[in-house]
Amino acid sequence: MMLKVITSNLGKVNEYRAALSSFGIDTEHLKVPYDEIQSSELTEVVGKAMEHLKASGLSDFIIDDSGIFADALNGFPGVFSAYALRTIGNAGILKLMENVADRKANFQCCIGCNIRGRDIIVLGRCDGVILTEETGTEGFGFDPIFSHDGKRSFAEIPLDEKNGISHRGDAVRLLVDEIKKMI
Ligand code: ITT
Image (cartoon, rainbow, N blue to C red; front, side, top):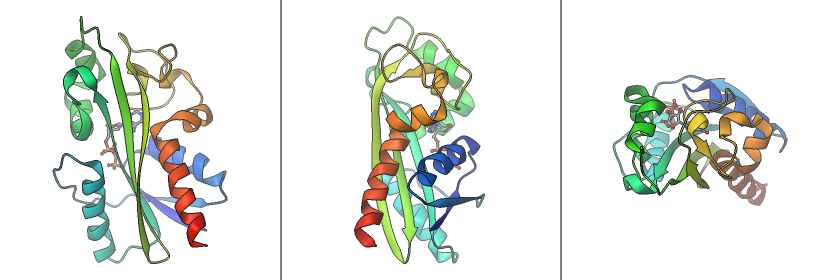
C-alpha cells in the first residue's frame, strides 16, 4: 500500500515515512499547494482541503494540519500555529509565556487520508508543557519548546521515540486502526 504525503514540511514527511513503514505502508512525498480555510477546528480545515485536492484529481494521499495549544493563552497559537511560527517564532511564544506559571499545552495533529476511494479523518493529541527556553536540535517547528514529560523537549528525543508518544504518532495509530477495518 502506498500513500502520497502532501505537505510543504519535510519534518512531517520524515515522521510519516518512519511511522507508516512500521505498519507496512509506503509513502511518497508530494508538494502540492492547496488552500486552507480559516476555521477554529483542525478537522474542518482538513476536510475542506481534502475536497479541494480530490477535485483536482488526486487520490490515495494524506494531508496533515497540526497545531500547539497553550492553556494559559486560551489555546493560542492553535490553528494559527504555522503563522505564529513564521512571524514571532519560538522566541515569541516563550516571550508571551514569560512569568506564566501554567505551562500546560497540547499538540494536536489532524490527518486527512483518502484511500481506495474513502476518506478518513483522525485527530491525534499529545499533552505536555511549554518549556521556559529552547532546547535540543532534533525535529522541527515547536519541538525545542514543547515537552511531553516536563523534562526533555521533543527536540531532544529521536524521531522514533517522538513518533511513539507524539500527536502525530497518535493520529497515525488511529488512522491505521481505521485502514485495518477496511481491508
Ligand atoms: P503543511 O504544508 O503540511 O501545511 P505546515 O508546516 O504549514 O505544513 P501546519 O499548517 O500543520 O504545517 O502548521 C502547523 C505548525 O506547527 C507549523 O509551523 C509546523 O512546523 C508546526 N508543527 C506541526 N507539527 C509539529 C511537530 O510535530 N513538532 C513541532 N512543530 C510542529
